[in-house]
Length: 297
Image (cartoon, rainbow, N blue to C red; front, side, top):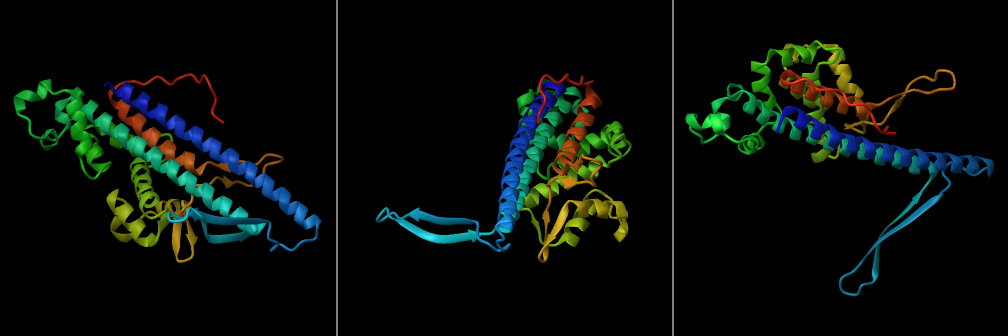
């Protein structure tokens, strides 16, 4: 496999994630419009805000009789349904970000194997496993990919060897047209993904989260990190009770005339991964931008 093939596979699969996101956003917009219309009718009917407008009974069929066993009854107001819509949509976005990161890590494994095919010196010898030196030149891509997949502590273990031996990567991590520290961004998304998968997107201790992340990427600065990084982390974590949760919904900007602009929070994070992948692949081979044949909503 070539670097360009790995990148094409990655971007094709990420495009599907964005398609799913568009479908989720469209469904959420329609439900929001419906609930707002219901609330308008409630006001016109002079009903109180706590008026129950939705009811749901939950049950399962028992194994012994096959009869329904009811275990929960839920009444909800319009506001409760709005709150549930926000929570559900954000949770769906979280899973899409987790998938986008996992696709990125799959790409890194392929890219790491491609790097060894290009130059065997880019891997530390231990990464080749139980192989003799005279077998290195003839090692197959599949064997290299298997070794890449077996590595622990990803993505750092896949990226550190390349970052150390290919200076262009480190340069573009911090000096780029995006004005973003891409090394920080990749590790940030990896840490968000961990909480999305393992703690339902809840960060119980934001201080610990922040310190661990900044220490990992070398930006803790002996307990005096740059305020910009603290603010960036805060912008993706919202407080709920005594903890924080990963917030990925679009943020409305102040209206400009009849138009309202939004910050695509999910898209920002996913695009950082794409940008880093592009840095890696173009370090070895040029990549042509594709002309769009179909627009995603």
